[in-house]
Length: 263
Image (cartoon, rainbow, N blue to C red; front, side, top):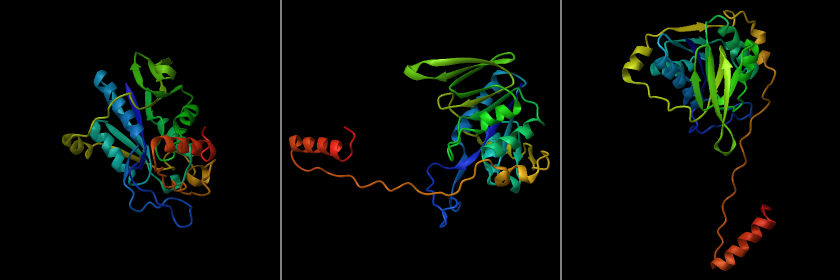
């Protein structure tokens, strides 16, 4: 079985984001970059399938600049077999569509039975690339999967829904599955794994290698363009209501009703 795990490098959620003075983008200076947490679930699920099914190969596919190689190497250190890195200045500034387009072109050069990805990236929270990719490849997709069973030529995916119930979906392969929290607990890369990762193949592909003109990808080919960034308003300071409980409770109810207007 051949599995492709999609990986995106994103800012660490603990990184304090600052905007450029003109508000055109965030300032990349001082940002710590990590593998998207939901993509970690996808990589781990790929490796679990590999361990259960002899002969399975896991290939990491990522689009990004030079720094993305760090997250690719992390996935290889976890146990993936090899990787493809889509790297080209032409890819920079692209939206979900241009990313999906480039990924689809790369996937058409590869053999795969199953594509695993995170349900969303924590930087833009768009959750759009896997769906667009499924459309471009003409294959089925199951989103936000918390449990996955792989059979011969098919998968059974479980999605959490209301009241603690699960939706069960069967799909033929090839297919795309996006992983959510609860599907597994991603492993840490071991020291031997890290050493082995340095020797594993990472194939670099440019837009030209994919048969794509620079005008079709990145900012030039984007259907959606970000016109500006702004930080959220600062949270106002809290208020302390002094006095006896019977007085402060009445005042609190009044404030909730008349000022906050939540009652």
